[in-house]
Image 1 (cartoon, rainbow, N blue to C red):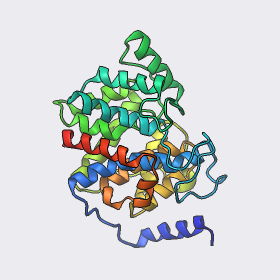
Image 2: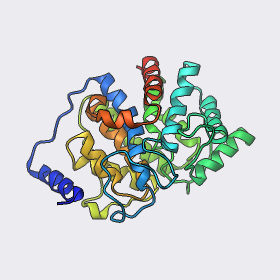
Image 3: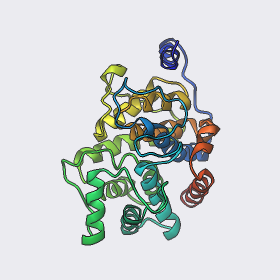
Image 4: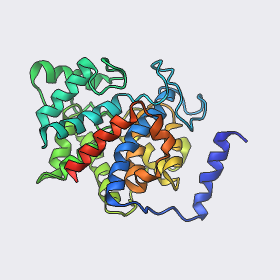
Length: 300
């Protein structure tokens, strides 16, 4: 039996079984949402742009032929999330303009990229937005047609930053609008925020994917379909490992489906549920962990 078949047989049993309940504490769930993002990005990037059934079944960190990188190198998802954390750590507060300028620093100089001195895997909308921030001082970018997943891939730090403000929803929308100013994307942000509200309160979300079967799942870069794909992977598994494996093996925009599922699963199961071998396979994982710890020390 192939790895894929074994995995499918495993999560098919969920219909008649009990789901694993979260046993993690608040900080562990918070850290899980952040590390889940990075791990999901790294795990999924090697099969990015592939069809659902046209790639080797991914269960471990492997080389990324798409960008010619070793295992464990994060893409734009991880970089932009780290930019959010870095801005809050440096400023000690929410500063939308500084977040935007930190995005530009990543875009232009590769700041917090996994590849020293160079950013890569940048979507057109994000690329244009960084140009607008750099040269026009525009901190609202995109249009209603800008419905890509570029702001949900980096969502987790935004949620923690927003909880420190009087109007969390407004803050999450502002951070999203830096690159994807779209009502549809804001609606998607709101749904993801509701999932986080449930999970960070220690309750498994009642939100379910609109997809009924794996075959229905759309693996495109549309924000709506990315969240629904990630939620399907979470809904149909009972632990962090299986949720991530299910998510990244959709192919397509696999790194972001993985990053979003990692945030959802990590915020429920916690950092302690993430396979240690995956974390330690991430490039400079100790530096990443130090940034996450500093960020949590300020925001929690």
